[in-house]
Image (cartoon, rainbow, N blue to C red; front, side):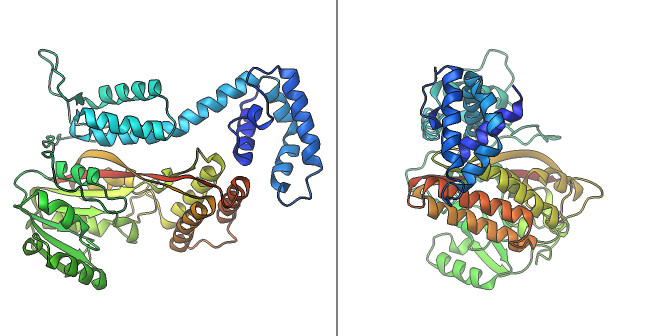
Length: 454
């Protein structure tokens, strides 16, 4: 059977909201090929009579156009079921892998952390055998160990864990995990306590002066300074209204005496050369037209051995979920983002340019090295949000993302990628029903890279 036939069958399943064609046709998994093809033929008759019905028009058009391919698939229903099962697993595994890598970032897996990610895996429909297999693979790959495990005699200490290919040229020593806290865990939106812990592990002991080059509401100060009493914080932002809000928040905070907030731009920092230990940039560079001056300015103000910790997303790898995977929507969204990224600027070919685009996260190591840093550590932290909501509310969330990206990339509603992703979103709502309540989710990988001034 041609692989494209299997893909067309999968696309129809996405369009009609079915796990597989047999379920769509009301058949059992062990149905004979002949009975499956007969049921498909009967369904074709139904759709031929529904072509003028707005509710069924898109599904009918797709079904009739690709009927021969679907009939070939029903001649081998077992192959179709295997393909759909593999596709569901493949859609979910990246989410699981990123969640595991985030938990393993400190090199140790506690029983509480293992139970947490096991429950997360169960939430997104990954069976326990698959979870255990992937966890064991990521443990082996990262060099992390379970809490209480005794290393083999003579075994070297595990290397600092990285996501994917290590960028290490001078490995950064792993910082000890923060001591367990009894106080309330701090979080705001996607910035969770787990993300705070990840940043803390990347800030060496003895760091006393840091600057957040686009601090916004200075949430990084609220998250990091309570854990580091020796740390002094300078927050820079071009938006004075946000700085005013941050000042009001910090006035009554115990850390307020260690915080200075000032208006400014990340490419023109009001600091002397070689004057700070740490420069931090969290989800900020993607909003600047040219990032190269920002990287060079960070290099200027850092002391020898100082660190530039940068966090940026990979917008091309976003995934949406609503009670399961949404292949048609995700594929259309990916093409839309690729076109937006192309318009905003890329560094993947030709001479280096600083324009950020939407996929700056995976390029951080390259940009750091270009500015004179030793880029020697990269991690990935999953930014994810799941909530129970109506499909129409979920679609409005996705629509706001499309609007925001379209504005930045100067894409119009008439541009083909915009039309395609809008159509996919509208079809999803029509297929599921506007009032249908389910678990809607959005996942995006954030790349965390450390550059050292040497």
